[in-house]
Image (cartoon, rainbow, N blue to C red; front, side, top):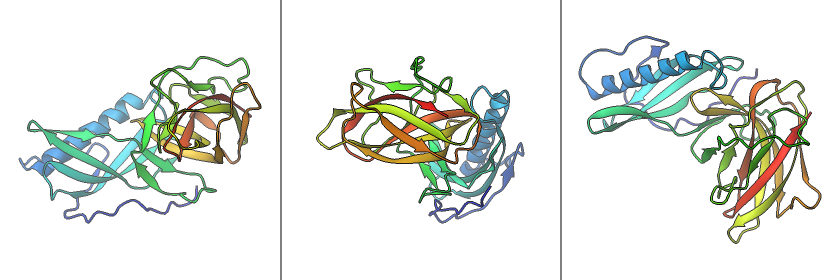
Length: 262
C-alpha cells in the first residue's frame, strides 16, 4: 500500500505520551492520566469486541502518540490505528471529554481516504458524515449480495446537506476491483440543485470508514422512472465489509436508491 501523507493534525501537542496496545496509563490522579486510561480502555474494548469480524474490519492494535491537555475538560489525542487488511492507517484525532466529573471518548465518524485517484488521498477527516444503519432489503437487480442501498423514508433522506452518508447496514463482499453503482437520486428539500458522488468504503470496527473509490458528481434529479445514473469505480480493493456511500456537495437534501454490479 502506498504511504499516506498526513494532513489532519494541526494542533500543537503540549505533552507527548505513547500508549501501545494494552499498556496502562500512569496511575496518578491528573486529568490527563484519567483521560489516557479512559482512551486505553475504549480502544481495548473495540479490539476485543471486533475480533470476530461482526462489527466491521477488526481493530488489531492502537498507539496513542501524543496528547494535548491544555483543556482538561476536552483532552485531544492523536492515535494510530492498525486494522486487519489495511494495516496501520494515518494518525487520527480523538477527544476525551469530561462530563459530571467523568471522562469519555467522544466519537465523531473518522474517515480515512485510501483512494489513490482522489485529490484527498491519504487524508483523515472527522465529522461531516452520518452512519445509516437501516436495512434496505434486497433489490431484484442487485448483482452483489447486500449491495442494495436505499433511504427514502420520510424524515431520513440519505444525502443530507454537505454530508457523506455511509450505508453500513448493507455490507457486502466484492471479488473484483471494478464496480458500477446504478441508481437514482431526487431532491428531498432545499433550493439548490443536488450534486452527489457515489463510492465504496470499507466499514471499520469502532464506527470509522476507509474510502476506497469515489465517482465524479452527478447533478440534478435522476428519477427512478427514467434512465438511472451509472457510477463506474475502478481500483476498489477486494474484500468484505464494504458499503456504499453518498457525498452531497449542495445545501439541498436528496433521496437515493440503487445497487452495485461487478
